[in-house]
Each structure stands twice: as structure tokens, then as C-alpha cells.
Image 1 (cartoon, rainbow, N blue to C red):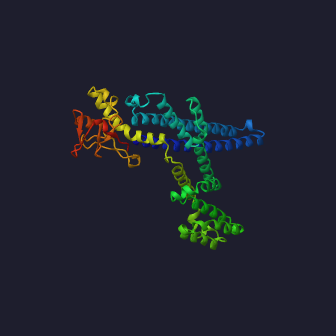
Image 2 (cartoon, rainbow, N blue to C red):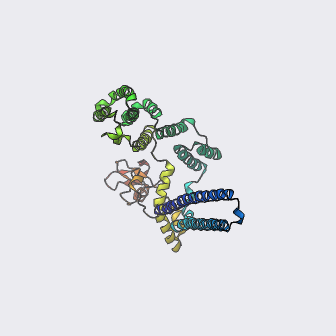
Image 3 (tube, helix red, strand yellow):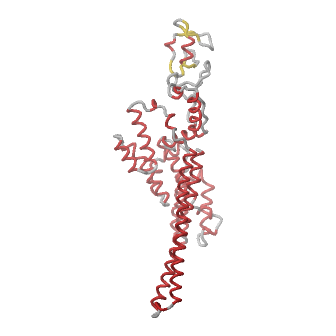
Length: 390
């Protein structure tokens, strides 16, 4: 992740250089065009121009000026090329080109896993609103996309696009259809949307005061919970003539409120539809960026000690990798006997007495055809143990 940040900083610096060069180039060209136009007018107005030595001097100076500016722009352009090449060096310095060597091939062992992976890619582009890209990928991967699965993503992006253009009606219609579920989630999204619509009417001045007053009736249903905020909104009527920008309510005009409502809608829409806020692809990529440096370090150690199978022969990593708290999604069971985290091949098992241990621990505890619980005197058959899913 640090490498991405460093590269992004260098790219930002390069973009600033490009913008500065572009601005200077246009200014220089504009200045030169004006200079040449003026010189052209002088030539047309002077009948004895060709016999005038002073005019020849003026033309020579003009040529010299054009050449000087051309050389300066060319030099600056070369400097941009060197800056672009430095981006490549930054990428080489911050990223290992051989990171593919730590890939575990058994992650995508069959067609079913490849299909799921392609579905995750399609879902990411649907979430981003890039419908054409998602459908092209689905076509190339021969995915059968169900319209019921696809439609929520398309609708969410259409609504967010409307909010970015300060149109709340599509979002309000969505809230009306999902009002019951929003109430269960204790969401105040619908109130925030009505508040934005009300403020837009107030901003139009005294001519729309009557419409704003009529629209304020929508706040009645939210009065038990949002009483204080509704009172503040009603106070806006006192400053309709002078404008909200010159009132104590000027903070309501900030464009940041529209950015916040987009995020609020995204979070609530994902909760209502049972989806995560971030796409699985984004989540996996973020976790991979955090884990990759440690994996590259252990890869180097493994190569030095000539034990290359350590990264591919097991269903778990040879080292612990601490991800950010936002990357923790479920609890992990560690066997109290072997002090190891359970895996797919070594799942947790519940004994008849209720105690839970790992399958490897159960195998080690078997004596004859019986196994005795390590925590109580109960004995049972190993076949009576049941797998537990966390």
C-alpha cells in the first residue's frame, strides 16, 4: 500500500507539471500570435517596407524571439519526458515484478472457481456504474447474468448519479419502496433526502417560499425522532428574503452535504440488499496490498533455505499477517489443544459433551475406538463428533 501511495504522489506531481506546461504553452502561443499579427499589420501599412533597414531589423528580432520561445518550450517538453520516465523507476522501486511467484494455483482449481472469480470482477464494475464493461466481461467469460442480480447495481448507480446532480426524486422513490426495511435498520436516509429537497426550494428565494412551506409537511412523519432538526429547518423561513448564505444556516448550503448523502445512500442501500459496501474485488485487492510485502519477504527466506513448497503445499500461510481492523469479517476458532487456527482441511469438531476441538486434535486423542474429552470424563466414538461452522 505504501508503494501505491508513493507512486500516486509522483503521478500527482507529474500531472501538476503537465498542467503548468500546458498553461505556459498556451500563454506563449497567444503572445507570439499577437506579436506576429501586429508585425503583419505594420508590414501592410508600410509601403517602403522592403527598403527600410529598421524594418529588416524588426523582422530579424521577431525571428529570434520565435526561435527563443520554441527552444524554451522544447526544453520544457524534454523535462516532462524525464519526469514520465521517473514514474517507471518509481514503480520498479516500489513494486516487485516477480510477485506472481507467490501465487497459489489451487485457489482457482476448477471452472466453478474461475466462474466465481469472473462474477466478482463483473460485480465490481456493476457497482462502479461501468455497465458496458461488466457486460463485456460477462460475455467473454460466458457468464449467465441474472437480471434480478444485476438490476440492484444498475439502480443504485443511477440513483447516486442523480444525487450527484442534485436530484433527490429517484432516491426518495427508492426509500418509499424500502421504507419498512430502512426503519428496521433505524436509517434516517429518507429524512435527509427530504431535508435536501426543502433546502433547494428555500434557496430559490421568496418566489418559492409557498412551495417550501407546502413541502415541509413531509417532515411530520419524522417529528418524533428529528424534532430538533425540523425546528432548525423551519427557522430558515426567517432568512428567505436576505438569503441563507447570509444567515446562521449557511452551512446547509455546502456541497459536502451532497457528497455525504451519496455515501449514506450507498451504505443503506447495501444494508437493505444484504451486500457489503465495498465490492469483494476491492476488499480482496486491499487485503492483498497489505499482505504482499510480508509474503514477498517470506518468499525470499524460503528461496534461500530451498523449501519452495512452503507457500503451496499447505492451506494456510507460513506466517501470521495482521490486516487492518476493517479487514476483519468473522471470528476464527483456534484449537485449545494444538493451539492452532482451524482450516478447511482441519475444521472444528463438537464432541457429544459440547466441547470443541480441531479434527487433528481429535485424531491424536483417539485410543482404540474411543476418544476421551480432554476437558471432562465423557467418552465417545470419534464418528459422533460433528463439524462446527462459525
